[in-house]
Image (cartoon, rainbow, N blue to C red):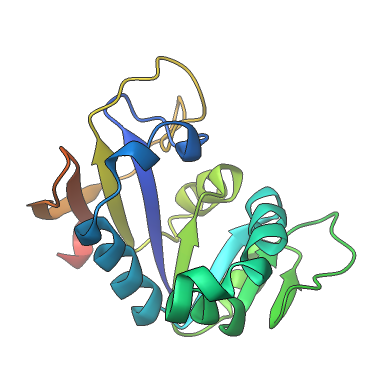
Length: 177
């Protein structure tokens, strides 16, 4: 059974949609280090189809300016959960058709974006850890990490100021603490 870690840029009101529209002005070296460390701790990425499509279109072209981060993004194993995707052409990508296939994987899986996939993982109680970079932004609308009706028990592990008004929060499944 894999360890599934959800990592998100998130607003104060719980929005994870379109972080490129509200998070970039807060970027700093500590946020970069946080994202670098978690990517290099992961064995593979687990992505929903929409996030996979966006990453697959962008990351193969960003190796020069992102150094070892881009190399890791492109070189590490990637699993995309999709019932509709026919081919996964981004390097080292595998299509999984359902969460039963996800549950059979091993290692540390990092999930970014992928709101629909995350909702399904939460419903099946498959998320082991949440790493949230909380930005001092209120959007008022958009896709939320925890959709209406979501129920899960999590336990606080850590809060850390990482500059620019951003706080890194870490939670685990309640019984794991």
